[in-house]
Length: 167
Length: 201
Image (tube, rainbow over all chains, first blue to last red; front, side):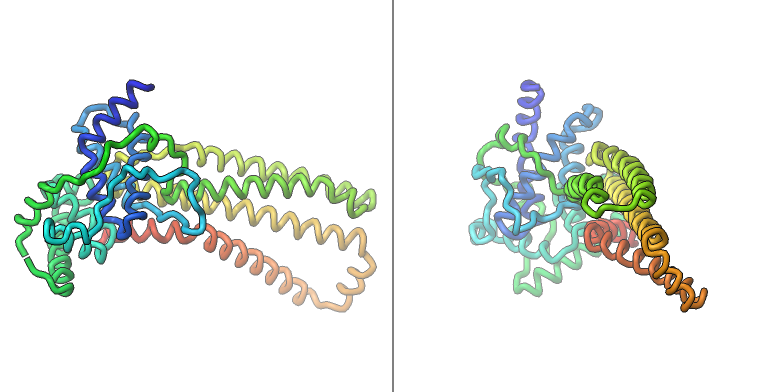
């Protein structure tokens, strides 16, 4: 068990940027991003036995991460989770990015106005996935993936423009 | 807006932060809609157990007649039987693990139908328990308050009585549906919205 745990931790630490980026895309506040980050790690660990090595680890990871984010329910603010938040999770605030990674900061702000499926489309697109791969991950047809992605990109452009930024 | 530039910056971004530790794997509470429904069902299970235990003492508290006691025991046994059957079904649902590595549509549809099925089971149990309660109340009136019952019946027309039965059924139905919707409906609604969003072309 300990060995499995170590292998798993090594693998997800190599690709933890995926979890960071999804958490930032799907949640606006830093606390909520941390919660989602923890939830994704938990679900990855729970789902790890289903990873048989037939596909790349990242392919499997994308699916579990996205599916978790798609159906994630925010924690009830009235109920405080007894499990302490892992303070080591460093969720970068939008303001922190300004200047240095301004475009990404605007992107993260703009995607908050997209719905959960649109966020998944943009995320997979930015992760260099082809239309076919996006379609396979989301379980829709390739044509549908292309149409949806184009619409989402247009929507994102107009949101960014509306927010007074253009690149 | 140049998406290629954006992609390059996106892929160059390397979020800071320490490594994910083993502590994060020890968190018990998950927050998928299924987990939320399971948690609520677990709470209800304990309420229901408490209620059934309390029901066992009602004849001693109220002091039923011998005849009504027999009816009550029968009602209680039937309620326990149905509750046990449905709790077994809920337990299977509770233990049924989900596979988040399927494609999103399959995964979300699985969640949707699993949740819907269990909400329907929950409603079925509520209906059954409500009708058993109404049945027992009728038996109580027949046995313990027969004279009052006969007097009322003699004054009322059959249509009026039937209409009342019908309204009772409607009220039980409405309360059950509203309760299930209030308690579990929001999760189902959210998941359905995602399914619709994925299917929309």
